[in-house]
Image (cartoon, rainbow, N blue to C red; front, side, top):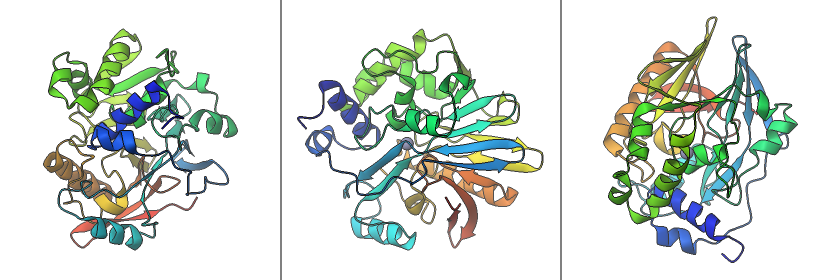
Length: 322
Ligand SMILES: [Zn+2]
């Protein structure tokens, strides 16, 4: 705790609240050494049609088990689901994997990383983009799935809140923007969530490069937004298409897939509206399976992409090899 600044504490409380955890839990959680080794090569490239995709490792949150994590699943069931997916059950691994897609016309960043302001074991996006040969100044658009800290703090410099991508268009969901920038939202939110809303209100409305979109909007040539609410009120996914190749960037629709795909009916504390999130999860998964498209997700196992199939009453992810 003593290693964290006051701002880190606020940020930590913010993200804990965003995931539905109590602020008290956030304040007592010790900063532990990372147990999961970082990938030997911190970026992985693959193609979607002619689009060059690069998954970039920002880090991981090794979330301690918590009986309040799911409303309708206990810790033992969570551990079994993690094991069944071939993951450790010592903690809940929640990697952060922003995706950079060079379409030939745009260089698009999907979610902005933690900015090193969410977990002590994350914040490596900038150095790993450099390792991948990606110049942050070359990014023309940043697609934001939703306004939780692990997706937007990478847009804001620590301390000054200065923009990290001032020359890029920041594409956000209009519903998400409206929810978080409503001055009345502050007092409606649990206390531990208020610093997040305050930081959003101190930044986004002052930025001239924010584009709000609704429904299935073309946000760049070959890229459309897809409504997927529930995780947050305006959460969106994105549909990428190049020639015959397609991929859905799902943001946090499936959150940690070991827990939200096989059992989409589990309602997690990380989803603001569990029932709406489940409906979006099933609808997007059905679309991915029916259209036989690739899927990527911000908290998927490294490198954050794979294929989806029906599996009983749920779905199974076959992760791409790193
Ligand atoms: Zn997230």
